[in-house]
Image 1: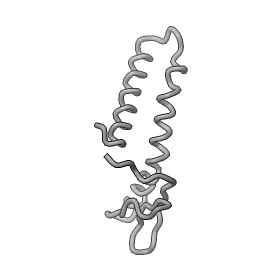
Image 2: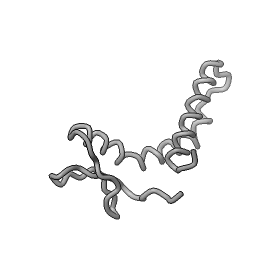
Image 3: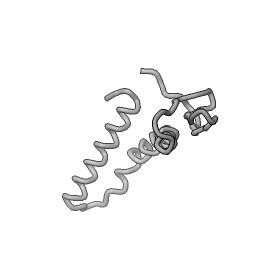
Image 4: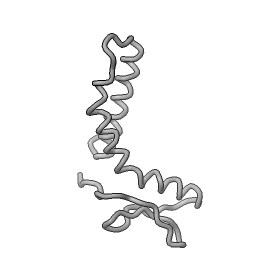
Length: 95
């Protein structure tokens, strides 16, 4: 599995259709309806920052689960941690 393109990603629109670009060049060419392309482009462009943010949350999250938390809070926490871990694995090609 190769690594994703590093750096900040942004949506650029050159008139013939938007694309997601990084410092090193294009990351994704967007297709579909214009309104949808732009929305999808913003989501794709946010992916590197979202990945880093969720990794940071997983590193620090255990410190925020209060001692004596009720069963439902622990179950919800475990479900969220599992979903976050699965999303990271998908993003990194390890699913």
